[in-house]
Image 1 (cartoon, helix red, strand yellow):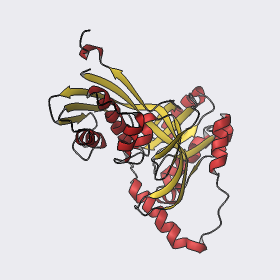
Image 2 (cartoon, helix red, strand yellow):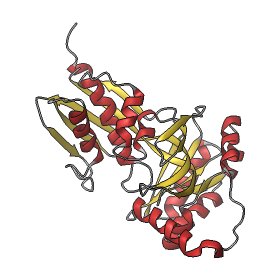
Image 3 (cartoon, helix red, strand yellow):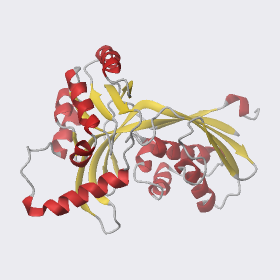
Length: 311
């Protein structure tokens, strides 16, 4: 195999609870992560040496600032390989949106180069390497529905739940820094301390897991939780407005994904999701909307038939 095409799917956070701070500077979390069909498309082609990355989105860096580029560098180093690769990223997942677009691209490079370079690494070995690049990347390697703990790299696959309709909404010119969101949450928790005001009881992880095991959309909608909303919503009013708009448009439940600013709504049907998208586009002209669904995997590898050697 000399070339391949990969589908790198976005993720949403059905549940994100921040349990505390870790000595390594990260936060201890409990998350339920879910792949959706919205995806980037990557083309990988072998070259004698070096890494050359291009992207059709000008916002995306094409050097070592790009996680996909760094994934290729990491494999070269760890597997003592001098092989090179050309990487082209066709972006469909919005940038800095809380949907793990960069993480999904890096996971796709790890999976694709494992095949192109004949490295023979297992899924577990790929996920261990992925954890060195970023907390969401190990999940993206396999995708589906998973419980993530630690800083997000300790994964437990859950029963796949395919086809649930989802409506995504992202303000066009707004990005939220993940590092800022977690730091703001820690600062808020530390400043409030014992004086924190009492808040309505939040959903718990057992509630979310029970809804998932029963594959009960209304129960899942009631168990959605994202602790980062506590700092992002007061700072960016549009995020809260979009959450409410999705609920008013018929979503069973709505939540910000990751550090935002994308919000999603779990919809009763694809038909209602499409109707809501069309209505909300007229109401929010500076917001992008996508109709998608839960997906059972994160990365799909498609060999390029034109590049295969004859047998």
